[in-house]
Image 1 (tube, rainbow, N blue to C red):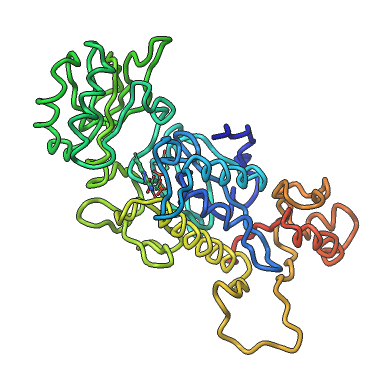
Image 2: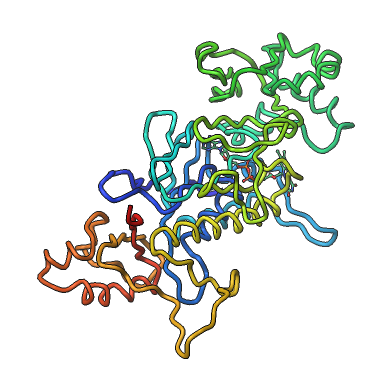
Amino acid sequence: MKPTSARTPPLDGRGPYDADVVVIGAGPAGLAAATRVRWVKGYHALAGSVCLVECGEPGGLLRWGSCVLTGPGWAFSGEKLGDQLMGDIDRLAIPVVTGRAIRLDRDGTLLLTTLADGRVLRSLAVVIATGLRPLANESSLYLRGVRITFKGYEHFPALLRHSADDARGRGLVVIGNAKTAHLQALIDAHTGHAGRVHVITRERLSRVMTDDDGVTGVCLEPKDAEAGSPRTLPCGAVFMDYNGFELQPDFQLAGLPLERDERGFLRFDGFGRTSEPGVFAAGDIGGRYAATLPAFGDGVNAGLSAYAHAFELKLGAPPRLFAYAPLDEPLGVAPVDLPPLPGDAVPVALGRDGASSPPEWVDGHSTLDELARRLGSSSLALAAELAQHVEERTLTVHRLPAA
Ligand SMILES: Cc1cc2nc3c(=O)[nH]c(=O)nc-3n(C[C@H](O)[C@H](O)[C@H](O)COP(=O)(O)OP(=O)(O)OC[C@H]3O[C@@H](n4cnc5c(N)ncnc54)[C@H](O)[C@@H]3O)c2cc1C
């Protein structure tokens, strides 16, 4: 999978907010959601601005080489899909902010996503696509000292024996949660030659350490920050218990009281709507069958819903998204899909994919009226000048609804 290109996150804090939609998690669900917001795929549509937040590497579980989409007569590698999805993210210049989201709050119309390092992203809508757990660098070490519960239960003894072989007597760390107790008999029976075995249930993996010979240890941080401090643990191999994470996700987002099921998975409807207005969700965090295609489809749903939510807040009417969501109203003799740009809207450049870039004077924080005054023009004339960039999807507007 290609590495993400470096980008400047939209965090200068000068506009009314940072992005129409913030997507937390860049696995297949999050990548599909972000692409829909920015690309929309109506014939004439005002693209939305979007930014992804990812604590590991974009691609999510697609980065485990073992993830394959299959039918009886076809197979499509997850890694290839990941490359294609990331190609779109690059093509559309969607910013990827590296960091772990730890809080989600509401401040009037805005949703505030707080990252572990204290940065705060302001948006009109949020999509939560965090999968079963936050990833670190473990997927890049798959089969190079890192293994996972995989295939079927009959394979678990061999998988654990291979992990114990990898450890070469230097110790094995099993990363899981309370449900990892289900593996205890298997661990006891099949990892005797690993050296010391540590089963981690209350801490999160933040990094696998390596040298030229392979895995040398793990960095761990407590899931509950009050209950300990980060630490390192030397070992020769790591075993990830996805059986446990599929039963109970590691999903820690403080703030808004999002409704969850009894196992800790997020509840959301067929349009990706959670219990909190403006907050949508997609993919494995819903706790249904964990598979790439449903995650991708969820992402499309949640992306379009978040786009529509932000659009309505910005412009006071729902977007015209025929044929995804028809408007239940009579059409005039000459229907128009693109909305007029109001004078108090802030034009925001979206980057590549169109034929031309918006003019230099689009600074991302001045309204059309302010720009018109500065340039000695009229808001209508400037809006007309920007129409081509709206059509090419290299420009949107940010606007808060009137209080
Ligand atoms: C070993 C294995 C094999 C698989 N094989 C197949 C297969 O053959 N076919 C198939 O269809 N499916 C397969 N799957 C399932 C498939 O990979 C998942 O269903 C799919 O990746 C889910 O997508 P997602 O976007 O919901 O979550 P993920 O792919 O898990 O992506 C979630 C992303 O969110 C990030 N994240 C989490 N929390 C935070 C946070 N707080 N802040 C910022 N970022 C965060 C994570 O780091 C991650 O990158 C397999 C899974 C595994 C583990």
